[in-house]
Length: 166
Image 1 (tube, helix red, strand yellow):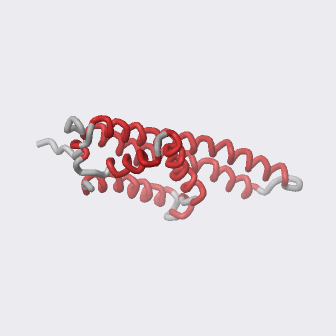
Image 2: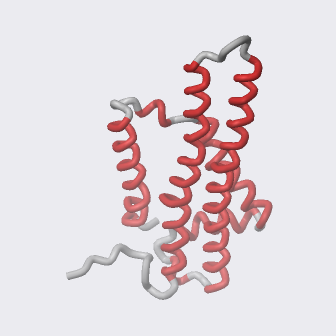
Image 3: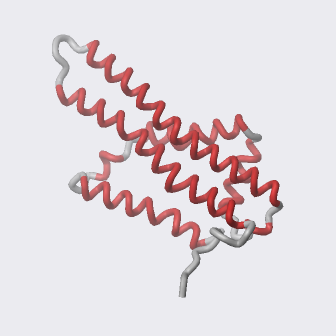
């Protein structure tokens, strides 16, 4: 595994967590919604396993972190890039689709409440609506796209390593 790639993938998540906790007054727990994380991070793997062979998904994940990815056959690298792009697209789509599911759930809460619903119930429902698309975008932009771009550029020597200009 290439340690520079691993650091480059982990660092944006740390910056995102730091900025999120600062904007929420130090309450990072309000950004963590485990059902949404599991849905947005886990379902794309299942979708890619159905679209491709499950072994292709495992190979793509191993190839993305392989320090010798440039030595892989071109066809395998292309398949791995396609799988990683599918994972990113599915994460984004599931994040957006979850807004619709959350809206339906929120409207059910409003319809089931006797009289006027409490504003806190509506506020927590709206907050839940916005967190899944955030996870979808973050997982695509900060995980799957960099892995695919690094693997795509590994064959021609560009993008696989961090380039430092003199």
